[in-house]
Length: 616
Image (cartoon, rainbow, N blue to C red; front, side, top):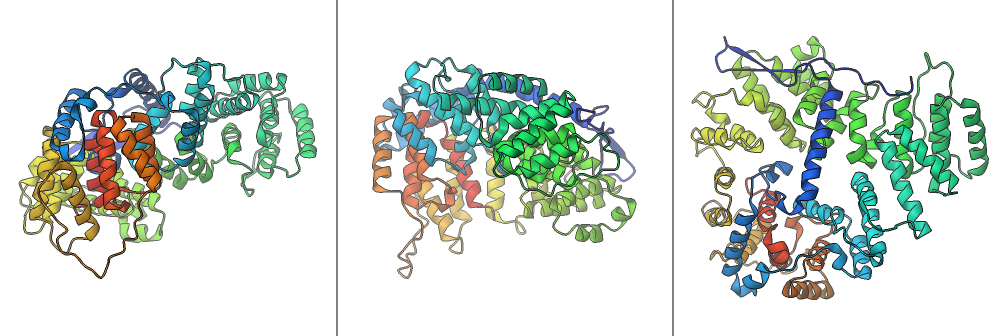
């Protein structure tokens, strides 16, 4: 068969139970829906969301919740943002922030940056660790003003190229198709753009369109690097079952290439086999080029061969879904792909749960869970799936809760706690707070917050024993719940003010310094760094160059949104918030308070607090 078969998954059921042992409630997540159906529904929903986002980019939600991207979903209106930002700027007169100027910033787009500066900015910005800033950066690149002129051709190409290099091949492809400029006027641009188009069609498995584009490019005598066009031509001939012609072109390719593409040859040899029965394909050759990964994936899929982990390492945004749906691919790799896809908001919790449920374990393994987990060694993905099924096999409430707590703790240690919280959401909603389970109140409250069930989280806080709980952790949980109910800047200010009662001299100096900076920025009259140690007078954290600081201050004063964002992002390239020198952090807070009327300042402060891990 030419196309990849998708094995229909049986209905994935999650069993959760009430606190009474005699009562059992069955929660059906996706009755009568296969994994591929769930993925198709997810892609359709995402397309609808993208259509709405592209028509109203400025209304995007900029808020974060407790863990990773779960902190991004607290609702926030633009009108409230403007009022709160104005209040903040009124409070910061000493920081030279003119509220009237900020209120009337001219709407900018990235084409207002001169060509030389834009090219430099995009070359330097390669790793924005802040989720808030990374998301904003993508919005800036992928949603530029469409009313551009011929003078903007170079700038448009820079944006498309940057998106492709970031692994955002779909956004890059869409920008090509939506462009009102003739990007084919430069041959080097045209070849690069056609490579993107071809790779996008390969990644989305639109093989008929792949072969049509291939024919067009051959007629135009286009040359693509790594013989991509020639290899695609051979691939299309195999699809049409023109094997003799494919073999002839492949022999010509071997004569032409100085260094043969061994992985392609191995795939080609398997593809043209007349009888594949009993033949085991084992990939032993390394990939020649990352640019060929999309062709390799299509060839693997059409032959129903296992997909490699390299696919999700090179391009997780576009190739995770094919890996998830590939039944021949080892479960470990599929689980790694679904975890990555979930954090990238590519799949829903239903898809995640369905794949977790499909992992194959036997009754003997469930009877001896500790030995089973130990036998999996460092196969964390398989352990996550095993725990998920183990939780759902528990009959008695106390046993089920105990396994859930162990599951969360394991997931937290490997950075997958948001996934563990999500897949157990239906189960923990059946638990009722009581004195019997009060010792787990904080963990359950945090899980509810991660799942944005703030009302449920509040119920569990009433059963927390303050003597046994980290006070700063408790304050942080209360703060997130309050923020969901009253999402304004004063809530953040009140929380920072309250930290004085829970932070002591034993707290890491980095945390104290950062909170000190936040207090200065928000005009909170408290100092945390009071004990000066003259034994440590040199700080290993570095400041940006004088040139960068001067330019950043200039654009803050002139309210140049695009330059301001780019320079601020450059200054913290490859750095987390806690790695910044305090005065550098203060400068960035001023910069982002000016950028786009301060729309990013609240999610940035929340991100800083999470990055500091003030609850530890």
